[in-house]
Amino acid sequence: MKKLTRKETAKINGGIRPDQCFYIDDNGARKVGCKNFPFQDDSGVWVYPLKECDACLGGL
Image (cartoon, rainbow, N blue to C red; front, side):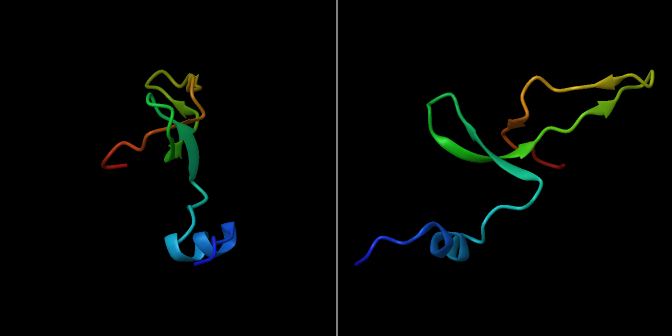
């Protein structure tokens, strides 16, 4: 059995969406997460997250 190329693996796994990215979790494993985009708080100030990519939170 031959080792799959990156493109072949992406076809099987479906790849990642444009709003997803890879991050390193606490155990050092590389996982798919969600991009953290800047947002405006209640007072209209833009808040920029410390991490660009982190674990996806349910319900977003």
